[in-house]
Length: 346
Ligand SMILES: [Zn+2]
Ligand SMILES: [Zn+2]
Image 1: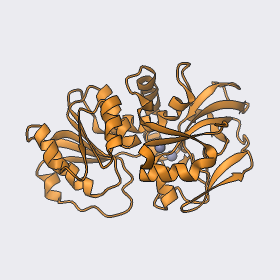
Image 2: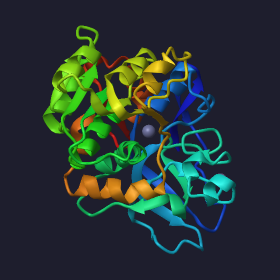
Image 3: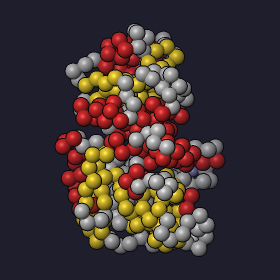
Image 4: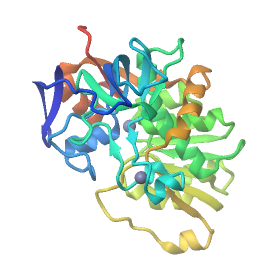
């Protein structure tokens, strides 16, 4: 099969790879139709991801068609249109048993050497990670369910309620999805800040952001205080890889508010004045990927049109162009937000 291999940091190469085979009775073979580039692929490409390392076939935001099933598969048949939850937990450990499969220490993630991803034309996945695509959902939309799930998980971790005010710092694809979910749940105002105007435009025009501020021209703390009458927001979400945003998020959050960190801030230690957290009794919450319980809500939000998942899609490229596509997702050049790949000839 055709596959784009992350050979080394900064180098994606097309190879002829062995097509994966069903090895357990509950597994399915899926032909990839669409796959998106996530911030975590960018991190892998740059050598800054905690576990996505070369050599590996990346790609975990995907939808495709079932081409073969193992004998124990009961919910799917050949030809079904599906999306994949890239989280494959062990199911046995204390975290799994407590209902936190995303925190499983033994989990496999799609798009790693352990579980080759959808930058290859075929993937194998166990049945519990597969979800049917509703008839009215395209493969492209299906490939966006995973980033939407990340947004759903952020809102759940924050225990977001209707009419709460939200600041989303960084409106790339994850920040965009967070914005869309917060809007769908009735939050507002939703104030966004980003260093790219085209990212802000997508969030405001199609995902429900009410205000936006271009960084670094505007001090987001001052701007957000002004919008909220000096009090600050109920929830600030850090969705961009810039550690300085964390202290700003704490500053712009009102007493008893929450700060959720969802960007993979792996590169530098935080600089924070603890007193800013203590004196306002702010909760700083980590949010990592999502779990199967977020899938159904994400599919519902997308199919009902409450979140316009395609708002972040800017490029559909042939799989041969992964090097250029991932670089673009990194630099946000050419108006890029969400870059996706297709295996079909253009
Ligand atoms: Zn992702
Ligand atoms: Zn586990």
